[in-house]
Image 1 (cartoon, rainbow, N blue to C red):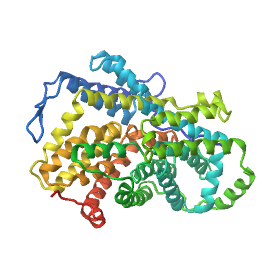
Image 2: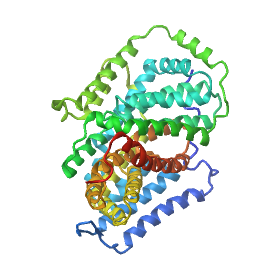
Image 3: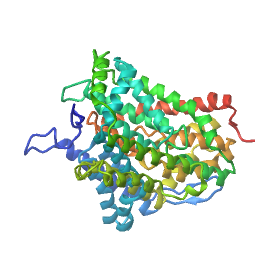
Image 4: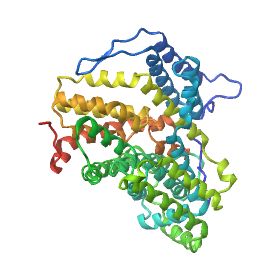
Length: 499
């Protein structure tokens, strides 16, 4: 059974043009991105943003250029006139050529520890496949969920969510991805993407985000957000308090994601006849667990335990999370689970994508463009009804977390939002938890979260299809945030209004 993707993504540049024929679509998209960049480069500086205390935040020339560069990257990433990794390289090149930031800084972000965390997560996924754990997990899952494609959707999403309760959603996506490839290989033997394939992989990426908000182990954003809330608003939120308030929201979003996949990508087949029998037979053929499978499990479980203990053991807090996860890479190769062949198969297109995402995120932050955007946006709601302010805040977080890393989005926006909440009469608890929910589910761009980019490797969907699906999903998320503020959290006892 092959576990390679059945097809390549349909948005590879140049596919639609015959040899020696000018591809007008491709060049039009390239030109549109450049036009937007130069529009921002040459335009006059806009009015300064003003916070509730009356302090002004002007947008610098570098900040203008950073906004233009971000829009250029967004256009190229969605419509892919060139590979997404090459667009990421362009982000560093433009910063260096147009003196937006020093080149050693712009390109240095490509080696940020967060990028190495993603690298290590991808290696874990490769180890699961090479060792044989992928097939074992896939067949066991299919034996449990049965032959209905709708329940296969739900089963894979629930397993993804369950794993995010104890490990980072990036590692979860890298682990579950080859399992989904194995499942999909039993569904369709053709070469073209299918609706079931699109729903399976896009839904997995969305579910990884929904699950990652439930505990502090799902990502680093929760700890960062709690730290800001403690420093700015003098509130202290505990480990289990996060789960108490966010588990209902994460589970609700998981069910809604399942429904959305059934609506947007109804499987071509209602059932896969004989699937359970095939899965049982192939599971028996695998025989007993082998050395590499046991080693892979022990190595990954060991790393996950250390990462989990970081949230409970103060002495472990300073230890780098990427370094902990990279120990798994060292052990896989040292113990012979992986070889040079697997190292050469790492999807560097995805690694470059996140290097570029880190670079543009830090660019928006360090030039003041992100802060100017946050204050300008939130300032529009000064004097409005508190619920409108909360929904506007949630929407801004949803947008920002799709274009810069979620930790950066929290670091930039949350302090401003906590100050604004005092003027709007909103409890800081609401602001914090809205931030944690919204930044956990970037449904628009591949760069919003590593699971999005990992799912893209399946070749089942294009960046445009992902964006098109993510728009209604983001609207649903905003509605769920409003429902949480009005119904779920008050029932659970969260203070909604200040005072």
